[in-house]
Image (cartoon, rainbow, N blue to C red; front, top):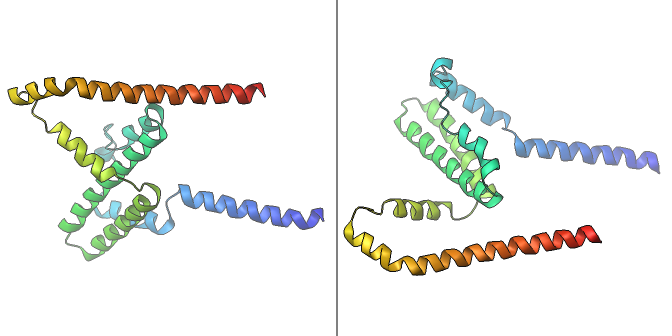
Amino acid sequence: MEFRLTPFFLGMCLLTCQWMMCETSVSENLDESISELNKYYGEKAGELHNGHPVFLLILKDLKVKFEETEQKLLMSIIIETYSRIFTRMKNESQSENVKERLEHVLEHLRKLQEYYFPGKSAELRTFAEDLWAIKENDPMVQRKALYEMKNVYRQATAMLRKDKNKDRRRRQAKNARQKS
C-alpha cells in the first residue's frame, strides 16, 4: 500500500510545483515576445540600466510599505500603466511583427488584470485624479474645504476606529489561540 501511494504523492507534488511555477513565472511565449521587442527597440545597457528604473523601485517598496489590498490596487495600476505604454507603442509602430508582439503582451496583461486584479482600480484612479486636480489656491475651494472639514474629519476618524477595532479583535483572537 505504501508503494502505491508514493507515486501518487510524487505525481501530485510535481503537478503542484508545475502549477506554482506557471503562476509565478513568465510563460515561454510571452518571454519570447518580450525578448523580440527588446531586440527591436534596442536594449542598450547604458540607457536602460542608468539607476532610474520606471517600476522596479515601486515594486521593491510595495510589499514592505503596503498591506495586501493596497498592493493589489497598486499592482493593478502598474499593469494598467503598462497597458497604456504598450498600446501607444503598438499604435506608433510601423512593423506588423512588432504590433503582433505588442498585442500578444497586451493580451497577457489583460488576462492578468482580469483574473488576478479585478476590481475598481480604474474607478479609484479616476477618483484620485479628480482629487489631485482640485485647485488648492482657489479661494472658493478653500472656503468650501473649510466648511466640509468637520464632516470629512469625522468620517476619517470613524474609519480609523474601525481599523483599530479590527486589529484589536485580531490580536484577541491570536492570543486566545495561543492560550489554547
